[in-house]
Amino acid sequence: MDRRKNQQNAETVAIYHKKLIKRRKPNRSIAGDFFLYLFLFLVAVVMVFPLVYAVSSALKPLDELFKFPPKILAQNPTLDNFFDLFVTMGKSWVTFSRYLFNTVFITFVGTAGHLIVASMGAFVLAKYDFPGGKTFFHLVTVAMMFTGYVTQIPNYMILNKLGWIDTYWAIVVPGFAAPMGLFLMKQFMEGLPTSLIEAAKIDGANEWRVFRTIVMPNVKPAWMTLIIFSVQGLWNNKAATFIYSEEKKTLVYAMQQIQSGGIARTGQGAAVLVVLMIVPIAIFIFSESQILETMASSGLKD
Image (cartoon, rainbow, N blue to C red; front, side, top):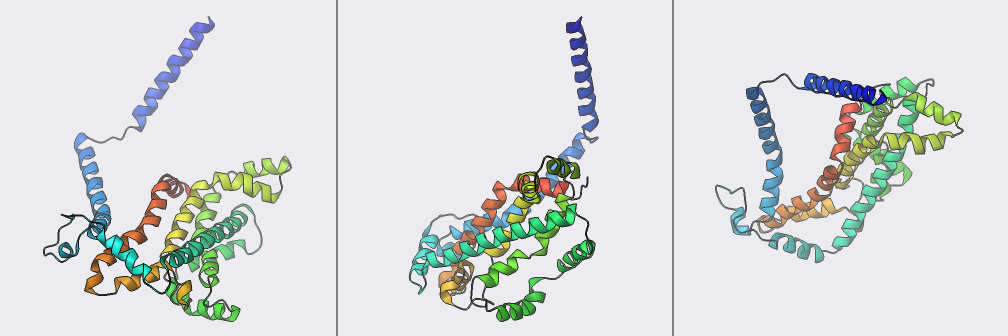
């Protein structure tokens, strides 16, 4: 009897599952699917073309770079442009490793600080009601409208008063307060069930433990996306406005100086673009699924 009942339950679940799959199937014709995938393919080609052309140009010998009409793919690919780039960097007054250290230090510290500050601020704004909380978040939203060029002068004046001009902190500390990270984390944390936090507090967890063991693991897609944006902004920061000492300048600044060296360094300039693209693209590829989940869930609320 029990065996027959279990079999009937299994058949009922299977029928319901088939109906659910049928209900979720898009109501499109074969022609509609064809044109949809064709459109997505064309968009993908348009988006990937600049990357392919940049890598191909870096692999072209100097004579192919000046061919007209230009060829998309290198006919005789070579790594000479990369070798020449590192030789040129090795002859500079400041070594390549020093430029690389400056960029990695600024990117790592700035991203870590931005993640901590934005996450803590977002947790308070999303899960606690206090006087002025909504007003403060409105100010954060308004701050996203202003680009770095608008705030560059007041930032310079503040950093000059603090004595941070020509130091790493002139780039690192402003990176902590980027409004995009706070906005993104707050919107995502609002979808975190409040009952989960209350249950942890009933079990005796303090605020720090709730934040560290409950909130942050559950908003991993959001802070992975935040890391992408922060790394992209700091890695590509020339820091020429706030840092004057050559031994403290970033890799992007040194590379762009080589890029502006004239026709003889056209191949090295193409190699520069590839070197500067490697880190942001690699981080994006490894975090792509987390970014998609963030964009799909950031507008949901409990």
